[in-house]
Image 1 (cartoon, rainbow, N blue to C red):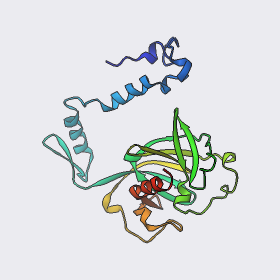
Image 2: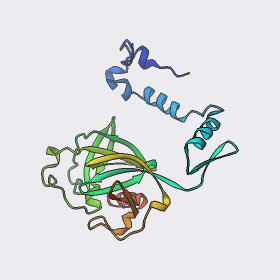
Image 3: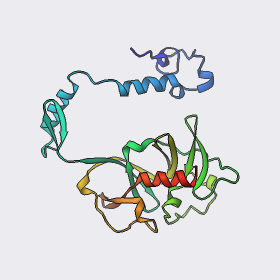
Length: 231
């Protein structure tokens, strides 16, 4: 059983707001107890009949039989990729959903003397954790947007995206996040460079989505470059 202290002594539901930790964390969602309980819910084992029930449901609702029931398990007949699509200026980009940790509202970027530059913008505080903030636009050599010439602190980015590779976590700013989408691997096309002035090595291929050409990024190379240039 999960001890839902946030509903008893916290700020959620009928909580009494008597928890001593509130003086430090302000809100239950910033508390490690709350986060641990959330991870426990996501990581708990599925009920015994869960897979079988969903196999039956998907078998009835998938006319193309992309998912087929075999011995109570789900087997994919075609490999798919799940990606997060976002926009930087006029370019549409995608990264594997497994690397995405969080999309959050903009926050203040604190520059570091003699360290911050066009690529490494500085440090940001994401839910109490200090993370490195980088300019993906600069790394990919994208064309500057109309407001890029203004001081960094005077123009807030629309979203901040937190991604992770191993023990390293990075934050970069984007103009728009368009959610999570799934594609067949066969839809990933190898084409000439379509990111303005960017190295072809950063793009694994192109996905066509809602009339846009979306560049599927090679995140392994991107993380390698960030580690080499900043850490």
